[in-house]
Each structure stands twice: as structure tokens, then as C-alpha cells.
Image (tube, rainbow, N blue to C red; front, side, top):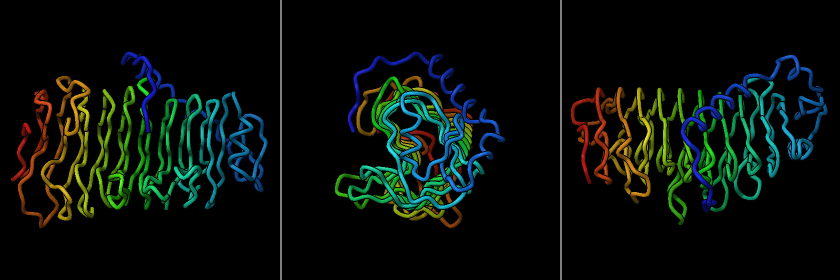
Length: 327
């Protein structure tokens, strides 16, 4: 996936956009969501029109802005959004499941419109020929994901590179994701290209099946108040990988490294592939990190190939876990 040449927005613009996007997800009146026709699994809330096809509902929003309410049940459908601004909202959070169907050989939702919000949905069993099957594939625009679940797939969320765009993930769960079976490299729970900002908060990563839990090429990251529970992981790698370096913060997270690792040498990796982004502004603070019960080894909390990360403080690290290592 390639990056588009765009001017990076300033931080205040990105943060404001993220706050508005999160507010938009929660602002849909419950009565409007529940008023959808029982026979229609997908309803455009603003018009009340119901559809049996998710793609038809997306096409009905068109160039405009709209909300698609998704009824409870297992939906073996997918959609490609090429226009507009769309919120995909479960009418009852945690009961609407997108299962095993990927559009364009990519994902259940392929997004390249102006922007999208996703709330309350479950994505599972996404597998495609190139081993990049995801619940959501973001190719253009901003994306906010709240209170959603990604499980038993090759990837949870995968994005292209767009330095004018941001990804915000909050209160979501990523389980049994990732693989290193494909010839093109590993898949991960979340894998982002060079976005303007990646913010992940209050979310859970667990039971990885290969690759990293969070891999982000963004110039700025904000990873706060999450749990990375690798105790039942299989052949996993780093819990956070910032392969091109990054500024921002990794704060108040909880990390547990399990026994079955492809690479147990570090919990967090910075600039392991390149120094495209400056890392001297990265703060790693207030985290708790340890090994799972029965795991007896040494590792490094922050492994830094940039030589720039200096703000590592007030982390609670278990015995055998070194605070920092320059590589």
C-alpha cells in the first residue's frame, strides 16, 4: 500500500478532528437506530430507508454524510466506501457480526471516502489470499473506531499511508490476530501506514497469532491506557513496533510477555527499519510491564534503533526486564 503526497496537519487540528469523530459516533439518537425496519439489516438512519445489502446502503449515502445502523445477527457481507462520510453503527453494540467475507480481497469494510466511524461492531474470520485479510482496510480519510471487536483474522485494522489522515481507536478488543505465514511478511492486530496521527486508547490486545500487536509507521502516536496481554500468544513479536520511529506518547499501558515468542528481545521497538520519523519527542512513561507466570528470561522494555529516545520514566518493570537498549 502506497502513501499519497499530502501536507501533514498540525497536532491541534488532528486532536480536534479526533474528538469530533468520537463525539459523532456517540451522537446518534437511540430511537432513530431502533426505528429501523426489522426485515432490513442495514438502515440509513437519516432517511429511514432499509437495505438487505450493506453495499447498497453505502451507495445510498453517496457523496453525503450518513449513518448506517447494522441490525443484530451474523452478516456475511462486505462493502467498499469510495465517497462521503459514513458512520457504521451497531443498533445493539456487540451483537452485529461481520463474518468471513472480504471485499476486493481486503476487508469487510474497505474505506476510501472522506472519512468513517465504526462503533459496536464485531469483525471475525477475515482471511484472504495475500494474508492481509482485515476487519477494516483504511485507504483514505480519517477513521474512528469505538467499542468494536476484531478476532480470529489475519489482521484487525490495516491502513494505507496518508499523512493528512488519522486513526483513532478507543475501547476496542483485538483477539487472536496476526500471522507470519504469508510470503510477503507478517500481518498484525493493527498495522498502519504513514498517517498523521495514530491514537489507541482504553483497548485490549490479546492472544496474538504472529506478528506485532500494534505496528504503526505514523509520525505521531498516542498509545495510552491499553492492555497488551501476550500470555496466550503464539509466535508473536513486539507488542508495539514503531518501525520508522515516532514522536508522541506510550503511557499508562499494561504489558505481559508470554512464553511462545518469535522474538522476545523487546516489548517496544523504535525505528527498527528506518529513521524516517524523529523519535526524540517520544515519551514512554507510567507503564507496567512483566513476564507471564512461568516465563523466566531477560528482555528489554524499549529497544531503540534511532538513538533518540530519552524520555523513559516512571515505568514499573519486572525482574529481568531492562529499561532501555540502543541497538
